Length: 336
Length: 301
Ligand SMILES: Nc1ncnc2c1ncn2[C@@H]1O[C@H](COP(=O)(O)OP(=O)(O)OP(=O)(O)O)[C@@H](O)[C@H]1O
Ligand SMILES: [Mg+2]
Image (cartoon, rainbow over all chains, first blue to last red; front, side, top):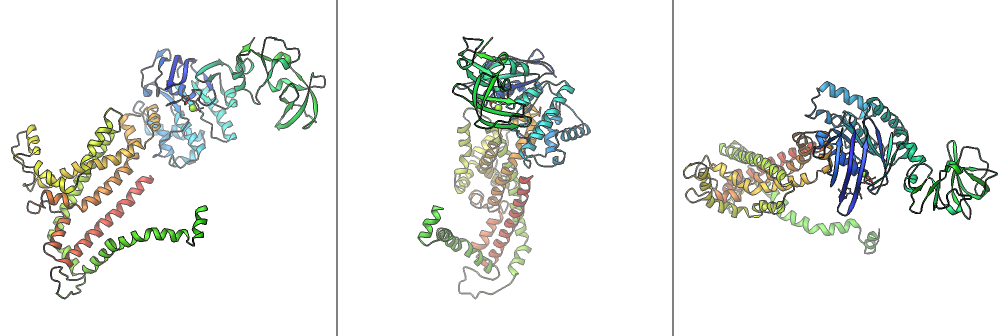
């Protein structure tokens, strides 16, 4: 495994700046997750690391060694493509064995066979080994694609939303499995996802991309608790953070702020609370209840673990945990 | 829905409309294809001579078929035809695929080159046959000139020599029809998505592995289809060869179709040549069917 360092990477397609001045350091053995909405440049970043795409400018280092002009095969990355890219004329078995048959690594038949079965078992596609790659469901294709990346031990695993078309249960199992593989092998992984649970549970660090700009890098906790912009605050946390006007907050600590962000779990139903609101809807989420409320001045959502016996249309009082309020300026940047 | 309503309003069902549209074509097909076919089959059981109109036509059963199949010269012509087909198909497959692979690369002038390569295919076979007799001329022909440029062979008589003549028709057919195989292979190559090669590159496959694992299986169904068309065409090959060698020297390039034409319209053995024609038809039909079955198997794999 290797560390990967991207330095001042720029990449544009015509007039679109897919990546602008990207600096990213992925440590050896780190699970790094890239978060960002569609079109943010996540796939482009992976393609540049793999060598399939050339940056317009900037440098790529593997283990502090410049690899700008190294062919993809010699960078030795393994890649789970967003669109699977299975070899359509071959069976699942051959798809999984394909990377092991590369002339750059001479594995004998027995080693290949053992490895393919091991991975197939892990991903629960053992009974599909003889299927043609085109005779699979979307989720099965995705697992084959993941398996094809996991059969070898590359410098870095690049994974582009590898669990996106699986059902919730399987996704959870594979999430645990992937994290276990990563810690066991001390693997370096660059992982793209939209799913924040994946991001927070697996990542050592998260990078948030916005229109080709890396806006913040940090541990999941840092990103969640100390976002440096409203954009980042919105990307992590479910249900989403409440963004309110600073003027509506009673005794605000920061008079020059324009907006405040309050996580739903930092708002409580409280007889002594200073806000009078009306309940719009309630939603039971397992152990917690999601309540959306509204008044003339504030509206938002709160999360409570208590058994509440109020319903839609009821008037309640709420209180805000003032120490947890995040303040943002009029450029939506965090104020500290 | 609305279409149906309109049709109903005129008192015609969709089916009736369909029949109205295809009837002229069906009638035409019956008149110029199906009827002659059955007429020929019925004549193949008689001793009919088209130049002896007054003569009574007698039913002779399978005699014509036995005569055709028992003739040494027929089997010889079949062999010549098979030889011609084997070499033209083999060479056209290899060169066609090779050219397609080259033209599939992105380079400047790619489209112009494709157009130029495809030109021979647009010419009439009779014209091609005639002008290649000039190119093959041993004294002043370009072919002889070029060959002598590499090695001093002396005048090369492609058409006059019974050893070289079969190759002369293979060369001309290849020159004319390789572009066809190439075009179809090119269509196959263009249908392969780039991301497969990208995946293979990341998986550290060699160029050769990429060709074997990705290119070949994708292009094979296309190549086989091209060869099916070429095979059927060359089994019936007539015009180009007649213009070029007239089946000579001796009968070195006399393909089955040329012999058939001579039996039918020079010796006027109509009944006999009908039997010959039916045999040829059944042969190509049988081979064609088997080939299509195999082709579909490969495609499904
Ligand atoms: N080959 C290309 N040609 C032109 N524009 C491209 C190309 N590849 C990507 N882009 C553009 O670059 C930007 C970033 O694309 P990218 O594929 O990296 O997005 P992404 O973050 O992976 O999005 P998604 O979550 O939808 O996969 C987009 O605006 C996209 O339209
Ligand atoms: Mg993408």
